[in-house]
Length: 232
Image 1 (cartoon, rainbow, N blue to C red):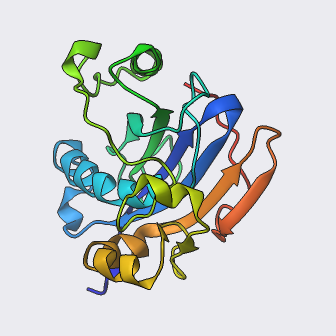
Image 2 (cartoon, rainbow, N blue to C red):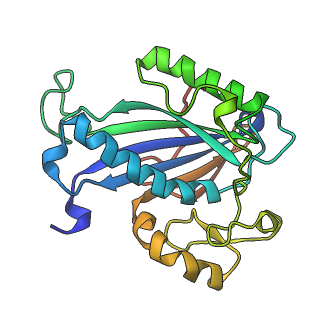
């Protein structure tokens, strides 16, 4: 079966920055084994692994300031999810008496300067709130002492070299997904072995500034405007 014919997990991902800015992504992850559909115990780890892979592209998509202090660039990304991976295949009956939209997931991602500081504590608080609303388990360790001092690449840095200095450059976006950014062809070639698969999963991407003005990088024909989503 060709990849484009496979059923997919639809993901709406939001990376939040300071002053109500955010990047929005529409992701479609092909499901290799259709028998996983309707079995969240199998589809959940399958989706999580692939979401982690495409996260590198999403993180590269735009430079943002820490959502909570606004003083430093975001480096770490704290994710909580609202999952509907239990749903049957798209179009099948059984979803509130209507055709199912298919298995889907919403990812709320907080751009944070450091998870082992006060901004990380606020991000975990948002995650706890969402968890109570959705009855989802906590993702990641609960206390700042469980996060080390590892310095991660900045959001908006080159997806190839990940250099901090690259956020100051005019980077080149992948011509297909319009998301992953690179210093130039050399960095893109270095990353291609990884990106050639995740590139196909990105269906749309948009930047929303503090005035809620939208800049579309890749237009998704099924979602061509910003989704109004309350911040968790």
